[in-house]
Image 1 (cartoon, rainbow, N blue to C red):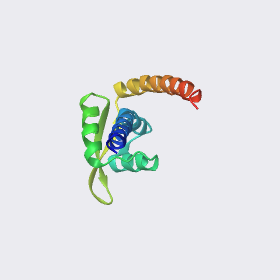
Image 2 (cartoon, rainbow, N blue to C red; image 1 turned 90 degrees about the vertical axis):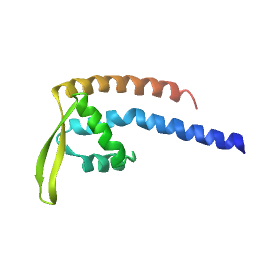
Image 3 (tube, rainbow, N blue to C red; image 1 turned 180 degrees about the horizontal axis):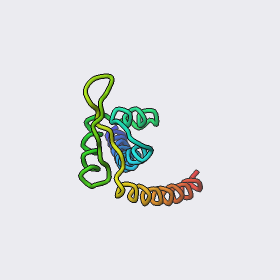
Image 4 (cartoon, rainbow, N blue to C red; image 1 turned 60 degrees about the vertical axis):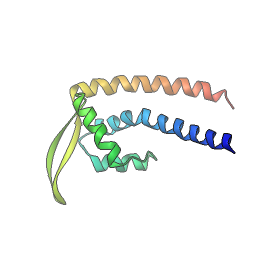
Length: 118
């Protein structure tokens, strides 16, 4: 029983690390499509089965801003206080283009490896 529980804990940790590894990329992809509000990012990720809570998203957005990859602007809202909308900076656009290349290379490699696994 211990070995099985240990296996499940390792599996969950590995799955979590895989999701974390692509989360920043996915968020940048969403922002690259145009001005976006944090709640819209959460909904888009949820629709894609990548569940993210505000407590995870906001620190990541702050890191991306501090790295010079995204910027934000406050905009008035019909539904309450002003909202912070995120966009890619010029540096962010170059960065996401490089990440696209990396992603395409990784998915190609993983597909090649896993297609011969079955």
